[in-house]
Image (cartoon, helix red, strand yellow):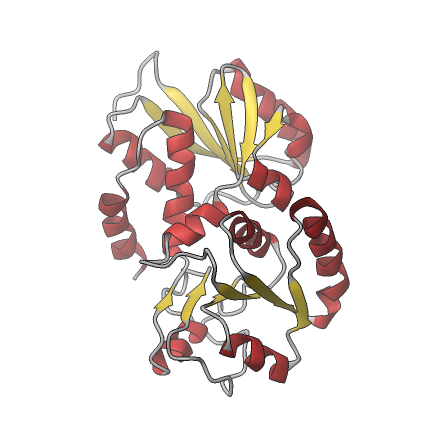
Amino acid sequence: MKLDGYTRLVAVVANPIKHSISPFIHNSAFEATTTNGAYVAWEIEAAELEVTVANIRRYQMFGINLSMPYKEQVIPYLDELSDEARLIGAVNTVVNENGNLIGYNTDGKGFFKSLPSFTITGKKMTLLGGGGAAKSILAQAILDGVSQISIFVRSISMEKTGTYLDKLQEQTGFKVDLYALEDVSELQARIAESDLLVNATSVGMDGQSSPVPVSIVLPETLLVADIIYKPFETPFLKWARSQGNPAINGLGMLLYQAAEAFQLWTGKEMPTEEIWQSLTEKYQ
C-alpha cells in the first residue's frame, strides 16, 4: 500500500479498540480495489469525541467507524442520520459527504447479508438479547419486511427493552413481542414457529455457556445464527448443529457490515470473498 499526499484516512474510534480486526479488513480492501486510503484505530476518551468527529472534516477523511462506547454518544455531532441509525439510536459508520457528516448503522444489513440464501422478508424471527446488536438486527428486519418478531431478554432487562420497543412501534407501526428469557415454555413455543433464531447476547464468548437450555427442540428448517465469532463455534451453535440445523457464526456479520461501510465511503464494492478467506484462516 502506497501512502502519499492524496491518501485519505478512515479510523475506528472506540475504547478499547487496539485489538480490532477492522484495520485488517479495510486495509485489505483498499489494497485490493487500489483505493488510496488507510484505516487506523483510535482509542480515545469520551471528552475527545467531539473534536475527533470535527477532524473528519478538517482532514477530509472518508469517515469513521464507531464501536463501544461511542455509537450513541456520537449522534449529537452529526449532520444527518440514515433511517436505520435513527431507529436503532446508534451509529457505527460516519460518512463524510463534502463536509456533511451522515451517520449510518451497517450492523443489521451486515448481519442479514451474512446469512446464505436466506431472506427475512415475510419470515418469523426469534431474537435473544436486547443490546446494541439486537437493536440493529431488529430495526433492519422491520425495514426488510419481517412478518413477526419475538424477543427474549432477561427479566431484569424487560422494562428497558419494553421502552425501546414502544418507541420503535411509534416510529414503524411494527409491534415486537417481548418475553422473559427465563420463560422456557414460551421460548420453546416461539422457536417452534420461527424461521430464524438469533443469539444477539454475549453468552457463549467464554466457550462454555449457552443462552438457551439444551432441552429446547428446534424445528427442522430453522436457521440458527450467533453474533459471536470468537470462539468460532459457540456452545449454542454446536447444540444447534447437533440437532441437524444450519448454524452461522458472527464472522460474516463483521465482514459484511464492514463491506457496507466501505461502499458508503468509497462507492466501491469490497472484495468480500478474498477477505473472507484470510479471516477464516485467522479465526478458525
